[in-house]
Amino acid sequence: MTPVDYSIIGLYLAGMLALGVYAQLQQRTAEDYYVGGRRLGTGSIAILWMASWIGGAVVIGSAGRAHELGVTAIWYGLALATGCFLFAALFAARIKRIGDINQHVTYPDLIETKFDARTRVVATITTALAFIAFAAGQLSAAASIMQVMFDWSFGISLLLTTFVVVVYTAFGGFLAITYTDWLQLILLVLGVVVIGVPTAVISGGTPEALLVSLPDRFFDLGEWGWPAVAALVVSVSLSFVVSMDSFTRCYAAKDETAARRGPMIAVILIIVIAASATWIGLTAAHLYPDIEGGDQVLPQFIEALFPVGLKGLILVGLLAAVMSTADICILTVSANVSRDLYQRFVNPSVSNRTLLKMSIATSLVVGVLAGLMAWRLQDVIDILLIGFTINGAALVIPTVAALSCQYTDATAAFWSMVVGLLTVLCWQVINQTSLFDYNLDPLWPGLTAAFTVFVLGHRGRPPWQPPTGVV
Image 1 (tube, rainbow, N blue to C red):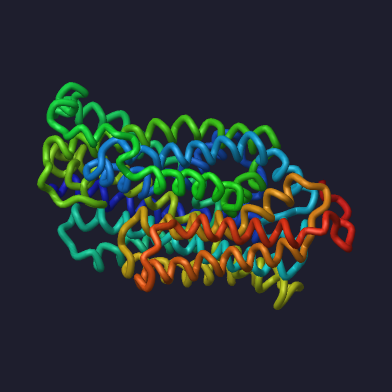
Image 2: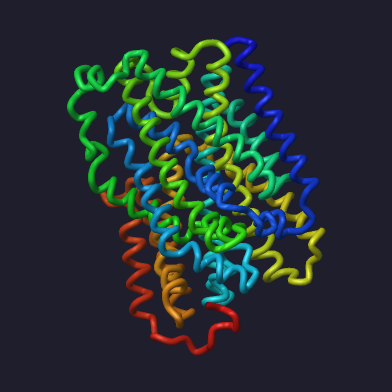
């Protein structure tokens, strides 16, 4: 790293902060802060989908797993592409239509419309827990990049990246995320796809060289372990259906067409970037088999092979991928606290100005909590899988019923969410403490418990009529 590289990185971080301040001047209401005024076109929606799901796990995590396990690392990206496609094809237009009729801003808004207030509370708590984990995973990945670039400790690196992401997100809201995500996606595609893969090939990472030098297991798609792959694909795909940022992007779209086409475009880009990160990871395993694995594989690969100036630009692209995911996760939890809990249950008559100030303050607090979780756990994919499992197991059954059925049972939905969430959390504690030797992902018992409770408790028709306007 040279002063030129450091200057590029410094300018990028300063630019993110400046865009956050600029966006703050453009917004007047909480609706502007959380859904950008409901006026975004297909291109912006596609960029937001990409930025939300292409983060540390796809770029940093996949390269690290490919260095360790081989091509099986691409399963994380394929799982994301599958979930994105299914959501776009089955739910996006309908969510946009329901959201516009009822002026929804958050995912729990829809849950209460279809069920009741207590179910909204459970959905809010579950969403907040999952998205704090998502934000923590991205901050951990960003810290890994900074650690390699500046040769700092993980703690100092985490402190800097958390500060930048939290500040521009808290003050700029959804508009800041939209502005910064355009720049961040361009840098990511330029760094990983346009420059990263050709550099890997030129440096010796040709298909022929990889096939000769790497063990056969590196080309086994099931090397990750088929049970783990199955849990990954199912939990990630289900998370799209209950992920609050999926709903937020639908609400922010200018029409149903933009809401549906945006994620469809994102599917293509997700696969391309995931494949590129995996290729780079395989090349790193070929060229540098003895380097430390995990989340530092890709940053170290860039530091070793890229020339002055270009090195800083590519590392900025990696930071962009991570920050563009962390910001929406922080904003999501902020909306859960300020709108879904405070405005809905504590102070329904709160003014727009007060709610906007509270939203900014809440974003700051959430960012700090995510940073602390990142400090405690550090591994990107492992952190994110906790969030996906919580979301997928606890919320997916009632949510699919709410979007697919004309009548739904609020009591069955409430207890399904509660039992699913508690089952996942208890199973996770058991796995962490090693009290029992269960080789079973928490998704399966959690999803089974939630499904069983919903089916057994559902009466086919609730004792109340859906609110007027719901479709």
